[in-house]
Length: 199
Image (cartoon, rainbow, N blue to C red; front, side):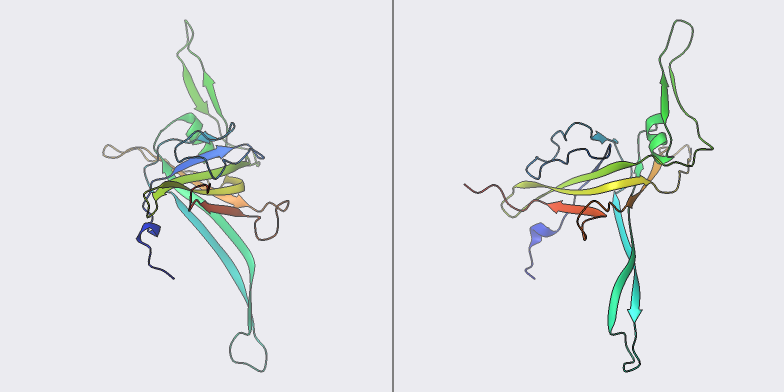
């Protein structure tokens, strides 16, 4: 493998959510440009955005060998984690798999937002997109993107209020397999633009 310094990536990331079936941004879309209609940026984050992918392996042993002679994946999981900085009902609803309700102010009632929880077994389903960027050796600024076709909140939220740090909302999203996609492409996809259009 070549030693290419520009392939060492240092980038912040934006996290987007969208309804199932929303059009993906084209690979040619510039970093920080507006994504297609339906994608919503979840806002500032307090911690790095992490992709976790893991799988279970079946080790196949035969009587004629001390070591495994074959190995196959039998289960796979993928997730994204970060901490949302903006402490809103909308963000709490995302992390807690619920719905936020906004109440406008009137002449007699203050405006407020709220999230009610409890008793609903269903988890809202959505697409997830993550975007970062990097400079190649020629100083072109290219996007790096990751997409989950189907995802839900993973396991709830823990709130912490303190006098010496922001009250972030831990966001854990877990991918589901999309069996309508081609085999080997059903869980998520990663894209890194590497060259400009040739003329």
